[in-house]
Length: 84
Image (cartoon, rainbow, N blue to C red):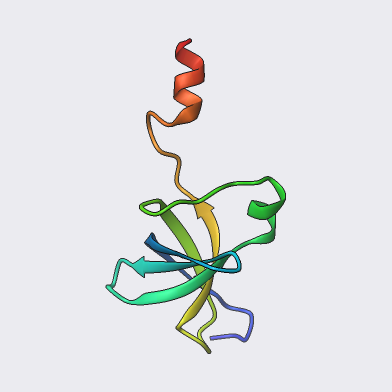
């Protein structure tokens, strides 16, 4: 495994922590601390408890990660705007 290789895992946000961090429960039942990636902050993509997310982790520290994608929820706010 090269130094630049990242692990990409799926999980669910289960806790919002101070300073822009989140507690994420991964599919393999491990809990990590994750922060939002720069692009998500730039475009103001908000995450709440219960959102399904994709997390990138380094193989050197498996307790921390970076949230790089939040899955779209069917019937969310964008769907409400289209119906009206």
